[in-house]
Amino acid sequence: MRTFSRPVYRLASGLALLALLAGCGGPSQPTTEAAAPAALPAATPATTSAVAAGPGWALLGFVKADSANPIMGPSPAGKFTDPMLHRAVQWEEKDVFNPAVVVRDGKVYMLYRAENKIGTFGKASRIGLASSSDGIHFTREPAPVLYPADDAQKKYEWPGGTEDPRVVEDDKGTYYMTYTAYDGKLARLHVATSPDLRHWTKYGNAFAQAAGGKYVDKWSKSGSIVSRYEPDGRIVAAKIKGKYWMYWGDAQLWAATSDDLLHWTPIEMAAGEKPPVPLRAQAATLPTLKVVLPTRAGKFDSDLVESGPPAMLTDQGIRLIYNSRNEPSFGDKSLPVGTYSAAQALFDKDDPTRLLQRLDTYFMRPEKAYETTGQVNQVVFLEGLAHFKGKWLLYYGTADSKIAVATRPG
Image (tube, rainbow, N blue to C red; front, side):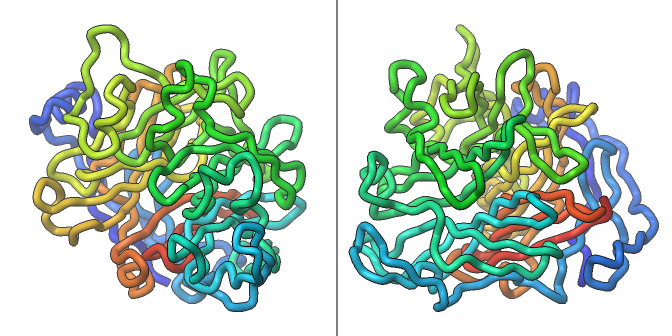
C-alpha cells in the first residue's frame, strides 16, 4: 500500500474565500505539517501510513489498499434476461465502477454501476449488488437490482441506463437511492427506495414536482443527501430545521430540500443574487439556481465539481467529499487534461448553503495504472464511504472501469 499524495493544505475561508470567488488571490493561510505515521488496524492490509495533516474538520489520512486494489473489475459471470433487449445479457462484462456502500447486518453492501457490451446505445448501465464481511473481498449477486425495464421510467433510462448510485436510509430503515437515469442524451437525477437493498421501487425524477416541473428536462445528477454516519455504520438521512438536504450537480454544485426524501426542490438564488463564477456547460442551462460550491480557476477543480458520498453532518458542520475535473488551460497546469481528483468542503450545519471552508487542493488523485488508464483516463471518482469494524472505508471508481478502496483508522 501507499499513501495518497499529500500536498500542503490551505483553507479558503473568510476574506480569502470572498477574494477567491471574485477571481482574485486571497492572503496565504498558514501551512500544516504532516502528522507522525500511524498504524492501520489489523483488519486492513498490513501496512503503516503517514496520516495526512490538514484542518480538523476534514477526513484525511486515507491509504489506498494497493495489495487488494482494484477490488472489483468486469466479469463475464453475471447474466440475466434483460427486459428491454429480451435476451440474456452479460450485464457487467465491460466495466464496473462508481459504487455506493451500506453497512447492514455486519456486512458492507455495495451497489455499483456496471456496463455491458450490447445495446442500442452501444452499452447500457445497470446497478448491481455485492456484499463483503471484511469490506475488501466482495461476493456479487448474479443479476442487477436496478436497471431499465418496461416501466414508467423507461423513456428516461433507456438506452443509456441507470448510473452512479448513492444510498442512505431513513430512521425507519428504508433505503433511499439517488441515481442517474440516462436516456442516451440527457442525465436526470432519480430516486428509488428499498426495504432490503435488493427490491427497489422507482419514484422517477427527484425534481418532478418542483417549480411546475421545469427542472425535469434539465441535466441533473449526483445527489448527496446530508446524513448522520452512525457508530453502527448506518448512514441515516438527517433533517436540518425540519427539512432534508441534498447537494447535487456535476458542473457547479447546487442544493435542494425535501420533506420526504422523494420529492426535492432546488434552492434558487434570491432576487438580485448573482452566480459566484461564470456559468459554463450544463450550469448555463440552470442560471437561476444558487451555486453553493463553485469551480475555481487555476486549481484542480477548475472545470467541474460533482458530489461524492452522502454528505456527513458533524458538530463542526456538514462535510462534503466532492469530485472534480481539471482543465489545464484555466486550471491546474500540473495535472493532465480531464483529471478527476477529490477534495472536501465544509458547510454550515444550520445553513447548508453557506460554505465555510474547503481544502485548497485535492486529497486523492489518479496515480496507479488502473486509475490512469481505462474507459476514461485519469479518474478517481469517490461515491461510497462506510465506517466499518473500527475503520473508514472509501470506495471509488477508477478510470470508469474498476472499483478500488482506501482506508484510514476510524
